Length: 133
Ligand code: ZN
Image (cartoon, rainbow, N blue to C red; front, side, top):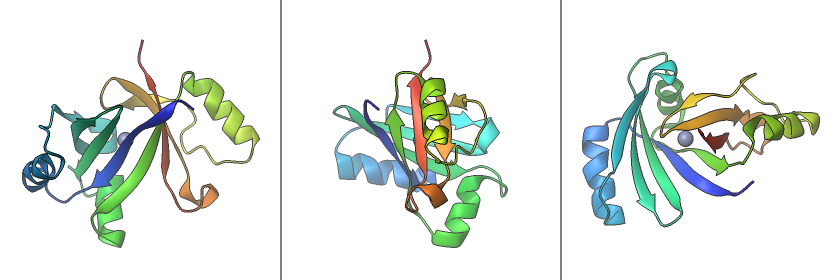
């Protein structure tokens, strides 16, 4: 894996959280983007080589809505950038990690993504992401 690409933070309301994180990080949000398949709206902040991604649910069935219901707002996932997402998915499932989706899917910010189930990663939801070429 190449680096921590971003940290995903679940929030109830982007309209409140974007200005809050702009103040906190002292840097403007450079992009907001909906990801229909996940039922979320995202907002991104660049911090050096890494990013912060805020996620707000747009549907009750969204994983983010369920997460906030159960645990409240907070850190939702860590995303690692990889060079070849399919190869990493194969490598990790062979080691016994549970890859949640069978194939990489379209994520926010021009990425192919997949997730590892927290039950095989010490409770941390892990996203693998690869820049789309
Ligand atoms: Zn993410």
